[in-house]
Image (cartoon, rainbow, N blue to C red; front, side):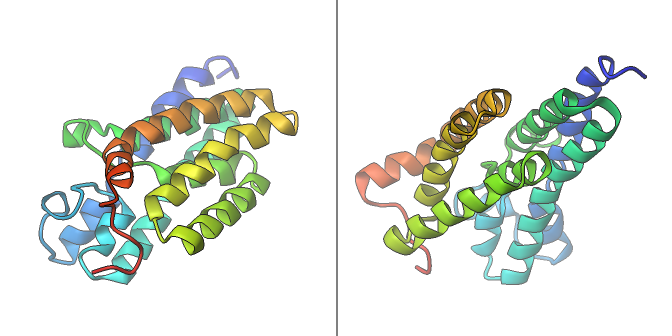
Length: 197
């Protein structure tokens, strides 16, 4: 198969991998209540943490990140960098809008990080430092993700990676859309802080 033929394949493979709902699968296997009925209703690691099981939350975070990384690596190996970028986008879309869950998925932060690892790992260091600095300062997990993702495309553009800057600009806009309720709560001062019960 030619690299050009791998472009749509990269998107499809990414979407299918991204749509695996690790949070929902792991919490069901552990016998907890339906993840979508608690907290934000999201299937991501932050909501899994609300079950009180830190191990499950960590496993969900790892699984969701690996969805992005594995999709990028597979598509990149067979189809080159353009297929890898489409796989990253596909995995992100699959997590946000999984066909198996009536297109109601997670908020995408872990998959975003996983895609960064697969495409350009130094950007993960920048993302992580920004997330940590914001989290320590404000104790808002959602705000930390929003700040770090906002800066990521700027980082790529500044260091001469326009294609990655464009890709992550799109992913950042989608991530902001997925966090629209968090943004409303941040504006209202009602968003939960890290460590609060």
